[in-house]
Length: 73
Image 1 (spheres, helix red, strand yellow):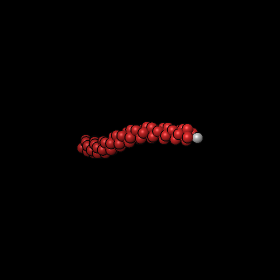
Image 2: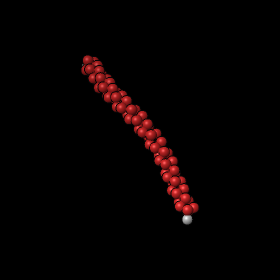
Image 3: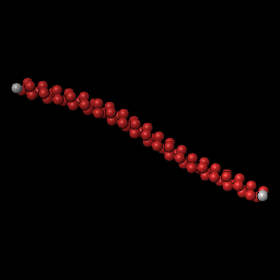
Image 4: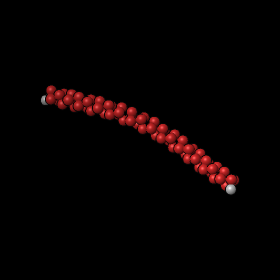
């Protein structure tokens, strides 16, 4: 009877250890995903700034070209 109780406790401990190991692996994956998300967000912000700058340059270019062609007429 005592051996069965000890065996049950050992089995429960093994299950708990397995769950903890899985938890640690999941935590590492979550940290990796967070790092990748932060990097992607940073790139997205940088891209938004670049797009804004390109649009401003495009407007300036069109204005220059229209002004140039109007002076040639």
